[in-house]
Image: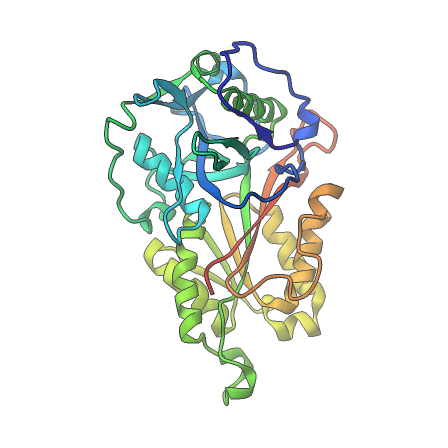
Length: 371
């Protein structure tokens, strides 16, 4: 699905129909010239079940009448929109999305599928780009423990945050582009692909070079900049709600996840099969471990690994992706920079359709930290 350019326009109540089949694995960005200056913002289309006892399941087909959507009112513009806001200096865009939602609504979320990027021209002539994700209410999870406290947005900015039915959201949302995002989210709900789990494949932070290290290869530690990278990765992992940590047992991978593990209070699952040596001697063990993590994916998970292992892990994920998503994976060495990650959004096809019950990668993102 192409990106959407939207601006002030007359209200339109009828949602456009969307072919749900096109939503699986379609790129969320329309190629366009890069403006000289972008105002970058981020937000989420947050949903929940009307019945609090309902638990979201992979592959679940969801009806409009069973869910509520979170929208906000801005008195300055007298409009209804999605919670969103500008990223702060040096702030990862994914962190800005979850922070802005909490500031404007009080809801703690994790990010799901990326949605169509919105671009429109401001009165100043600048181009504003807003990146959106599906927002899943997370509550007080391990990922939420690591986030700094936020202050609620002042009432002059946001004076109402309201859970409403999809049909009411369609009536209230002011911008045509916002209503198109609602249509996109509901199409995923009807297709059984609204509920996804992120699998974060993270290359370890910068380590001491082999030439300057006198100990064993598996004992090489992070440099000072690598330690800073491991701390910076906390916000990215938290934004995707990571609660399971899988790592190569070598020191540099363990140290990369250690700050997050300590703050979130979750253990690390250290695997010998994910080390460089094991991957070279027994590549089938590495591939089997990656497949096992994918098949058992029931909570947001990170795998911290080494550069030489990345092609094999990506091949496992690409085998569950369509042709367009396959091209979204890194295509050449070094695959990822230090402390950089590929986030694979994994869904399960509904049992009633073709390929029922199969795990598929619907979308891929790439995020990193400052070097």
